[in-house]
Image (cartoon, rainbow, N blue to C red):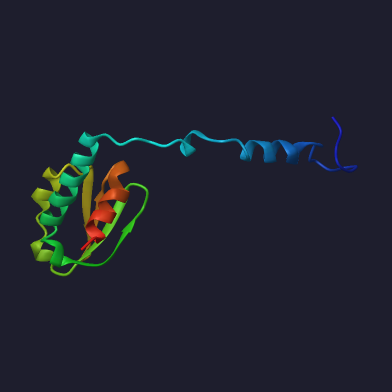
Length: 119
């Protein structure tokens, strides 16, 4: 095996192979169709979460999203209906402190965050 320089540990052609690997098209660039059933489930999840969080007026501040989780700040924590959150179709939820609720929504997290932010 030939190397770039005497004592170097990077084989010749290594950077060309890396460049080629990163320039390949991936499956993620293909358009993805969303079925109407999945869309209806997401809309229902958004409506159920808004109601369980005490209504749209009780949702304060920015809604932050991680890959599978949505962080929501509420104005009045007494208006949170935990049983309704459990029944909403979420994978789970957690109340942190007085005014922060984490909603575990799986792959619907981005759509849920958009729905909670729209006014």
